[in-house]
Length: 274
Image (cartoon, rainbow, N blue to C red; front, side, top):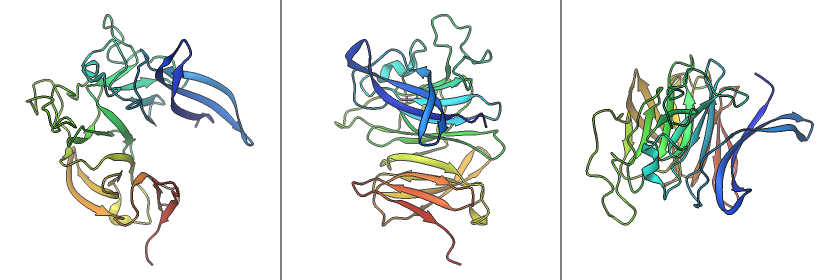
């Protein structure tokens, strides 16, 4: 509601052209132009990789902004360390300043923007209708895609625990759970490559109210996941003939909008048959 448009993207490090980083900016949309553009977050340190930057965003009900920051693929061990932004959910104020109640503000050596850690390649983050629950999903390696409830200061385990294996077939970790590390409320083996997510609170599909919709790249569909408390209790596969689906959103009128992922990608609006 602050009239700014927020954008996230990966960019080349201005001081080292061989390195890249994640950047989040905001600006005012005036006609066909974005004006007063300012950087509100830049992930640190920069990384030499083409993959796993993030960065989905969602505002919490207190007006702060959560940003997903991926593990950088080749930097997965750093997801367990607090001195970097790899494999983290970040929380900042809407202008990029750091909230005083972030969990690691007073931890020596820790990045004060960190909200949660131990994540891999995060590509979806949403809140429920009353803003009390944050849902996040992330790609596993070969298997082990996760749907998590993200909470302040929690460790989500990657790569110390995982339900997946390396792309080579090698073991990443012998552990699927450890004390002090959170379990996903749902995981997928084999992978579905989750790429977008929306919490449905519309009226066009009353039976789906309160469900999560997750777009998937492999084999290409949308997963409807029903939630009961802190548990994922049921899953339905929808829209299986459209190919890779990059994103799904709930429109203000209650319809669903799908974005397909191809050279001739489409935006598809979904409404009831009647």
